[in-house]
Length: 400
Ligand code: FEO
Image (tube, rainbow, N blue to C red; front, side, top):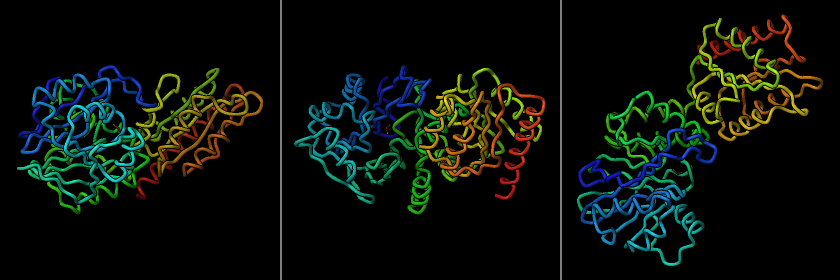
């Protein structure tokens, strides 16, 4: 992709990765982008780089704009390899006057690249860098999503270069939010938040408050992945505000797997009870749904029901996978219940309840176990569980 001017003398110089399908456990069905930005002022500054396999095309883009050796500064907003993979080679070529990073960024650079003589300069929140006509303001955003993460704000352009925050894993030939389908954009943004930032929701709350207090004028947000927000950057800030405060809808996610279809039958009976009460339900069979899509649906759901038959005194491996992944992301303020069939021992419900307790779920029912194949009475119990969960969802949301 050619370099693209996004503000006067500010260029997108990233890479589009159409083919990546897994980002350490996160399914990237539609690829991603690694966004880097070049500011051409009296001093020339490069904000982050790209993943190593894209180094050659990245350099080609830079050369369209300037002789890379003329770049004065590199700003490392984030050290994760998708943005720093080609940093050693780029530094060797450019020989920048200075490389700016946060205090934790310096530590991360040291432990990733073990540099001997890079001209690192540590900056902290409130520090500025004058480029000539433009000034960069630094804002540390520790744990969003790494300790080193930081934002760079160019006041004259009202441009927030936001590192991973506000990004999406979505490869497109378009670069701006107003050039793509809005619903799809929001769904990729939600998936990114759910799978990468949900765990850091308290930090996001503090950051949004800080940005508000700083009274930053923002008319463009340029994240390190996906589309640039220029139509209405406030839209993504408001979406983040809801997600980081665990705002939920009258929505229930049913996550289940099945061995001989008994747990599936139970899931369908529970579904009937939920639907009768008028809540929205997402049925997510673990055989056909990826863990990262399940977590995305859980993001704004008030309740989650987990169903697994018992296997070897435990649960099916697919259920253990998704529960382990979800526990790591620390969802909050969820209602939950478990169900599952069994042959002779029946421990799956107990183990699922254990996960929900650890996650702080409000477990509204001890759970339903069915021996082998559900009877007419079992179907009724499952239906009743659906009704019970739906009523708990509605009661809790009406109290909120
Ligand atoms: Fe896109 Fe945390 O790297």
